[in-house]
Image 1 (spheres, rainbow, N blue to C red):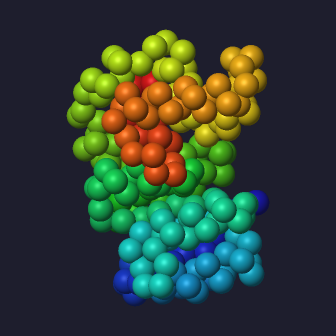
Image 2: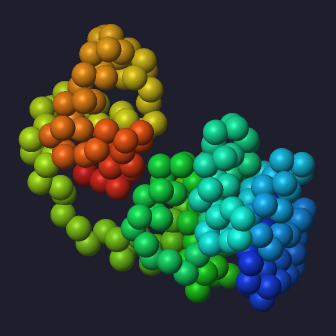
Length: 207
């Protein structure tokens, strides 16, 4: 059975092209939207399996919609499409557990592979995007961390809570928070909410 899908993009030609491409392949396209507000309304009313969203749209961006869906614990899996090979957007997407990140210039050749991957619970990111971002070295700050702190970082990158990390190490949540505070200091991060989570997503391949 094909997954139910909604599509949102403020570029009419891209929206039309993607919709027709998927319909020709018998995907169940439940609705299309040209702005973020309509897209969010469709997600709330239709509860599709997958929402394919342009990152930059009026009212709500694809990233903002993903954040709302995560906060409200909607089951809809988010795929974002964009022309941007932007590391910051990529890291935001990973931190929000977005399932797919597809570059628009490759959308028609990659979207089916992306949907298939998402259906199986596996994130999909455009290979072109990954290769353009992966030419970096491990952050030197990692050398300042103890083996335990590195293990804590890895669990944070896997979205584990302080309680879950404490359970893994047989320590209290308070001790975990102390580790996190020390890690933030050693990495030179701000104490803003999620700063550590975002850092771990940016550098997940080195953890």
